[in-house]
Length: 527
Image (cartoon, rainbow, N blue to C red; front, side, top):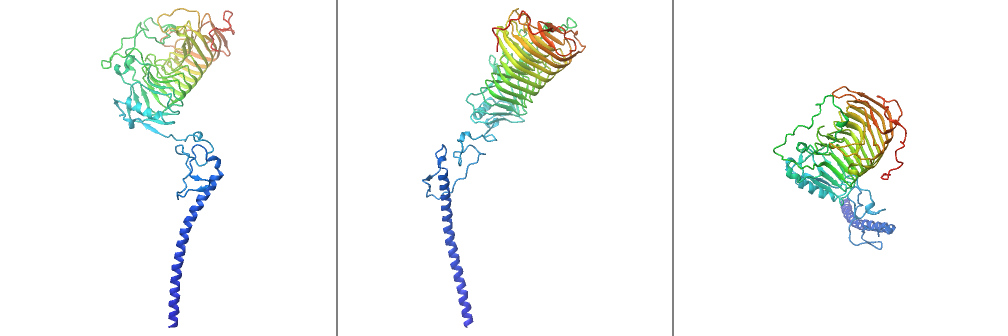
């Protein structure tokens, strides 16, 4: 009985001890929660004191008063991540928010289909493109997307600044086509897609810009200006070249298009422009134009239009500086690259040209204007079946200068006139003889090799301002016997030197630096 009583008492004592222990642990746990909360608040207060100088910066919003925590048991907010949009209150910023480098990914994407574009090639998607651009324009480093596997009919429009944010990307993976009805163009416009006064604008992708220019070419008037060097070419038979081209067949559906023909894609007054990956084809006139731009990069671009499409320059530069064009295929009905007045620091390399009229500086000085071009390099270029190779063309009566030009490693195949300087350029039937001219100096041709069909070299320089400092090195040009006579190199008022033997010999280049009748300086000099 005693044993049983002792066991019972021990059992009861054990139960009482377990109940008491559970009650004690629960109490401590409750105390612990309050203790941890208080400790966290105190450590934040200490951190606040240590960073007292930073709490007064703009954007620093912390709910502390004199180092004590506020009574609300609110957990401490997490430090913002720099991989997200710029935070309102960085954890202990060392610089203002706007000095933090932008995130590597783009903050917003604007797909034209989200703004109502149909992409069926029939519906007019101009308004959807305008709405998408208006949204993208407001966001720095945004992306405007023209998706693949869709065809968008877009009328003339301007993607304009100057109030747009910087570094916008126009992601072109689909196809944009131009309208072919005359009513869409009014009395005529100078461009179709126009990007104006933008900073850091990029057009990239695998898409196509199709100007559908055939409806414009068929209405081409015979008296329009045309880049034609036929006066330098004497055909084998008198009837080889017709007096007038055949009458074009007009489309009854399109009607007559305006006489002013648009450039397909133009950039004006913009900085740090990049165009890469896209194809521009069948422009009514020039395919890609840069006017008053600084910092231009064009690479891996294709330009395509028929060789007989009138005035369809591939890439046209005007009043632009610091331009790089490379790794592109240019086939058109005029100059593959045209470098006009106001251009400097232009570098063109690794370009395929043809069909077309070659790579040209000019024409310059038209209507007695002043032209200034300097520091131009064209190298590592292949030309096939082009009218010219590398050419400088100026009008009589102009002023200004072209200087510091290098044409290097130019491969020509079946090119009519591989090397041309023409200071009597005229795109009309007749032009007035004038004495003033654009001064040409410091022109170098090196490693120009291949085959020609008419004449290897044509230097026709001004009587009043002859070409000076013309340098020839490693010129190897062989004739191809086809429909035209082969002619010897031609020089007029061209001065310089051949640093190596040339083939054929270019004996007509006069040795010397400056002829006695050349003025020491021109009153209209650019530099």
